[in-house]
Amino acid sequence: MPRFSLTRLRYQLGYQLRYYQQCRRSRRHLLTLDDRLLEDVGISREQAQREGRKPFWKHASVDRGPYENR
Image (tube, rainbow, N blue to C red; front, side, top):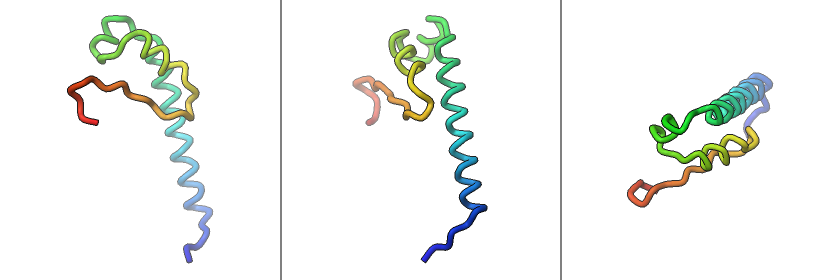
């Protein structure tokens, strides 16, 4: 039976917090990109707004083109 470890719990919570901060930062930055940069990334303004307004705890959704691997 696995043992409970406060060190492991602290590590996991710290990792999750950093992940959420990264998601929040990335999504907020996505809302600031101009149309030229969005085109370089390969997404539309509507896709950027939809993704940028998601809560930080929701996973990213990727709309894939017909020739991309699934």
